[in-house]
Each structure stands twice: as C-alpha cells, then as structure tokens.
Length: 170
Ligand SMILES: [Zn+2]
Ligand SMILES: [Zn+2]
Image (spheres, rainbow, N blue to C red):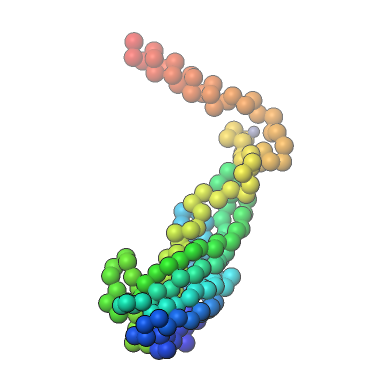
C-alpha cells in the first residue's frame, strides 16, 4: 500500500468522528520550484487530525519535508526544512482546486503533501541573510574576503553607456 493512503472506514459518514493520523514516506520527485527542490531522499511526514464534517473528511495538521538548493547570491548549496500548516477537505465529489478526492473508505494524503510543500519551497534561498554573494566582475566569493576589484566597476560601465546614449540623441 502507498505510504500516504489512509483507511478511513471508521470515520466516513460518522458525524463527529475524529482520529489523529501520522504517516510518513518518500514523495516521488523531482519536486522543484525555480531553484529549490524537495529532498526526495528525506521522508515527508503528514501529521493530521482527520474529522468527519457535514459532507467530507477534514484534515487539519502539518506537513514536514526538507529542501535544498543553491544560495541565490553565492551559489553554495543550502538546505532547510519545511513545516506547513494544512487544513483541507476530502470529498467524494472533489471540487477542482478546493478539495481532494475521498475514496470509498480511504484517502490519499500524497497530493495534499505534495501541493503544500511545493507552495512552501523557497523561491530565492540564501545561505544567510548577510551573504555577500559573488563579485560581479571576477566571480570571487566575497564571503571569503574582498577580491580587490574596484567596487564601482558596474556603475562606471553604465555611466559610459549613458554618455553614448546621450550623444547619439543629439
Ligand atoms: Zn550565500
Ligand atoms: Zn572581484
């Protein structure tokens, strides 16, 4: 049986019935958003309370996973963890984008895990908030110290372009 498929026969159509369910397993990858990716070798943990509400099964809890990606400024590899609060409804007739499918006596928490982690992956990971990044001129990692390039290189280049543009307009 798939790790995220949960038998809910004891909850379906039983108003007020609730149960905590904690499942973990690996999500098939790759799961990538811009530069960061879910670490598919690290188990994803879905820890929820499942509860029968008027016409569906409500899952309230957390989804946890781990990600990795290059620092946006210095390109060194960075890793981090994700912990996403979720509250989602499973219905026998799911509404697109609003609820997940409820089977006869089971639910598959995998799409919920996948979609909540995708939304929480960092778009622009940084190794630290004060990462100094790479020198735009020589590519040296400025976290290791100054490379000696004149700091205003880029500004000078743009200033020269401005002069050209101005003279061209005359
Ligand atoms: Zn960095
Ligand atoms: Zn440099």
